[in-house]
Length: 86
Image (cartoon, one colour):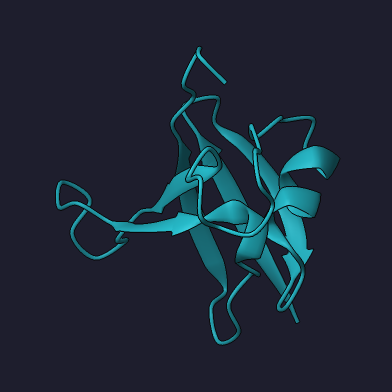
């Protein structure tokens, strides 16, 4: 079963499979997430997984280069923070 991934602030939605790398999903959606080390230590690719139940609450920050689409969800919203220095 697929997972609907919604990327903010561009409001782009794409279908993904659980376990698929977030960078790959973003690329398929036509979005670019900056990367540096590709090991999660530089945090250039940090994104926020939005809490659906409480939209105004802060979500969980993850490094997209080492994070996959989680299982057990039908949809997921990811807020991209783009740092112009990367």
